[in-house]
Length: 384
Ligand SMILES: *Cc1c(COP(=O)(O)O)cnc(C)c1O
Image (cartoon, rainbow, N blue to C red; front, side, top):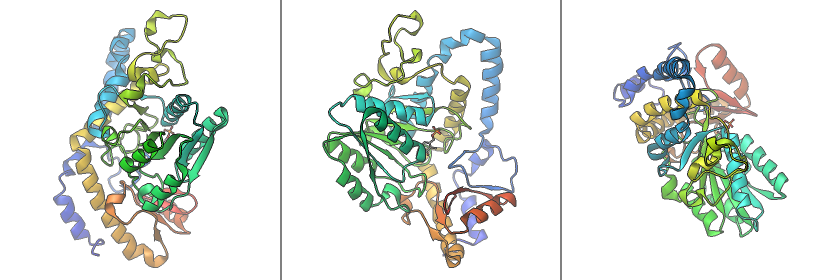
């Protein structure tokens, strides 16, 4: 494989239909190769101006009057995310809280709606926060979490994983909660097949899209997904701590009830009534005062991603990760490094993992010498 050839790389760059988007992002140090967008996406150029306007005009100028339009911001920006990036109907997505808190709200809501079922199914390589949250929900409700064992270098992208999950999903299962793209291997789960597997057993499904939104196409409505959550600061580039999103299918919105009864999920919010009465629709999944500044950062960043188009982004990421896999085979495999991601490009999200006992010093060296910023995941994985 001629993946190491810089001329070939330059030629691909010259023909890259997305090349013009480089100017839409801040490159403070153009010599550093930033390969950690899977943890924190780059700053879009438009974000600073958007924030300056929100702060000086909407907050500084209009003060409390701005709440007239800020109130609906979680749903408005949710609708911007819904169509092109999530394949979701208008009115089914809201921007709020963190991914962890949204996952908690939706997992509890799913369990409470099915009191005759007390099992949650997930996989043992799911993201830490997701596993902890599900364990916590189960402990509080007297439920059980069943963990599927999946090949760590392929995540849920392998038929073996589908079979392992199939063995755990039965009529006692209330909720199947999985990551669409594995944070570890980058493997893409078969959302359609696994959602159908859960539904065949009468269970609901909750997908975590943190590593897929903005990186790979997602079609929540097409797959018949019940619930989903995801973060905005990775491939969506919304910035550190920008609020996450949640999705609840229209069929379930008024059937489920989330456990954090705050005034932003209340109908007739400003009537200050004596008792919590949930709002209708996806608004009932909101809690307290939204993070206005953070939600504006989501809006600014998503515009750039949608202009580029997620299909074009995924095509490019497959070309990039294929080249990277070729380079790993040529240069790192002889040193004992092992590809820890699926080999088939269509089974991968937008990052590649490589494992080696020296992964930590390698990663640290690349960062401290200001060459390449990737990230290290214990015990021995570098993600690029
Ligand atoms: C990044 C990520 C999260 C982050 O959750 P926070 O609440 O934002 O810390 C959750 N789940 C997955 C799968 C992630 O990749």
